[in-house]
Image 1 (cartoon, rainbow, N blue to C red):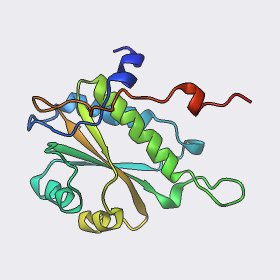
Image 2 (tube, helix red, strand yellow; image 1 turned 120 degrees about the vertical axis):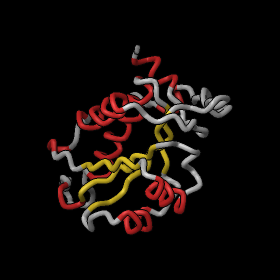
Image 3 (cartoon, rainbow, N blue to C red; image 1 turned 180 degrees about the horizontal axis):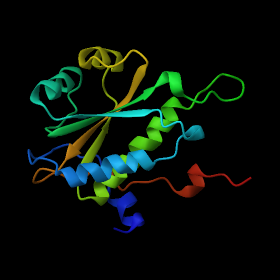
Length: 170
């Protein structure tokens, strides 16, 4: 699929069918995350693939934003394996995990899947509920699957500010 089509056509799906995600499509999504650049190539991301009803129920307990997706990817990163930037005020954890997640949502669309980036949840509550390691921090949840009939982008999906409002040449 043409990259311009992928970045313009991908949207946050808010209504999923119960059709399972084929393993080859999931692998393409996970591989895109694996290939994403990270600071110093530390690859501190950890992706949890949730499909079991008991795990999806834990997602439902922390957010109303699963939208019926048959699969949720939990994108986390190892806080003990991040690059600390000069000055010690920032590290690469959140941005590296964000790059990984962005690669995966775009790869999902390219593979014919729909997704939704979810950050409306308490990551500490979910981390405890799932029993994740102490050194990991959850960045986001990715609903993954096929859109249900009638699903589509929000009305404001194609509304974009002109570049003159978001870019400054210096």
